[in-house]
Length: 93
Ligand SMILES: [Zn+2]
Image 1 (cartoon, rainbow, N blue to C red):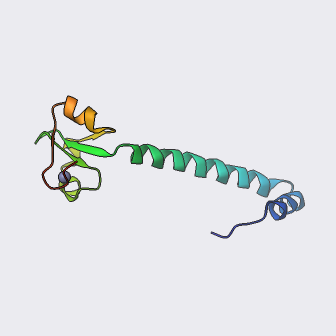
Image 2 (cartoon, rainbow, N blue to C red):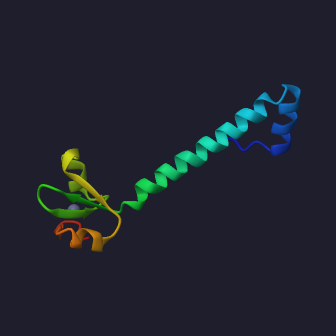
């Protein structure tokens, strides 16, 4: 994505009755919303298996093999331990 100077966008907007400026702000809001959604996914650093009662780092290869229905997302190690999950021997969370 090419960085467009603000002045250029503003002058374009004036030429086209402010339409591009409106699009620009819609795009900015979309980026903020996507970033927030992405951050909340990243916040879940541990994934528990409701079936085996084991928990993993979110990037453990076992997580990919897990049945999506068994996935339990957790933010902290304590949360997993308190919920009765045991650490995976492979990724050792
Ligand atoms: Zn694991």
